[in-house]
Length: 387
Image: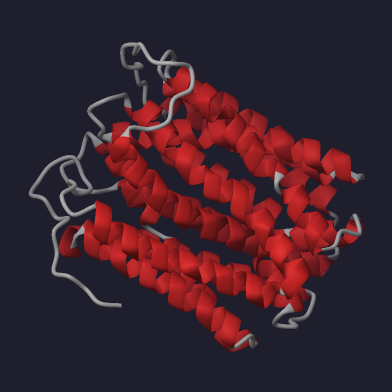
């Protein structure tokens, strides 16, 4: 039943992302203004990270997960009814906060389920998130073609996702919190977790940009039709989903270091392809490569962080997210500013550098870490690969 909460998170977030171009038009926002507005969502995420870690160290993670899911669905509906820019900003701050409560607690639940298995299953939870994201994006494309308003669209989805949460909650995993640690209310991760956080930063910067700007990129840089503007996002989500469905098997066979190295290469090459050849087929292929690249970075890094000996799994994931979500916080609004000054293609070219950064960080920081999964031989070590 924990899987259903990953579905709710992915479907709800992609529902919002699929209607960003429509909302931009309704509120008459240019790229710089939209970038500033989008800054509100990661502010909400970051603002509640310390609180989420504290709550997970004191209360059952499934209770926090349910509360976060209910608030998430309510705020999705509120976004659709925002008629002025300040209302959208306020709704996005609350949407980001609730999404953080839901996601961190759901990941803590997934670590608990992973501990019951002797093989890696962690990427499958994130695969469900991506499947839900693909379904939400596809439905969003249909809603756009039918002319359904974001308000009605979001209200219908919010009610359906709430019903799913009520159904799934009794079957979620009872998870007693770890003993309280004598730590400050807010603390940066230790050195090992910072390594994971920096990789998460680069990956989540690309994820946030793809969620917020892929539809607009296809509309304004690729010159796709109004209906075709969501196709780039759908292509990206499809690749991310397929990558996560196969990620556990590939990590067990080739090792985490190899997987993360290839991930950085795919992100960089995919974004460069979309930048250098901004045509529907080539840009779509670039988005597919990017989707495969980012697909398994966060599941693998969160899994390693969740096994940290220094703190509980929920607190460790929240600590890594403190660094990782800075990418989600800072980069997508920066893309809007760069796009306003130099164009969307230049902004996406800038993003390709994060793929290179991931590859460099993997080579420098993850040589001696443990693999995914709860047991078995180390699978991190692999032959050096060249991109």
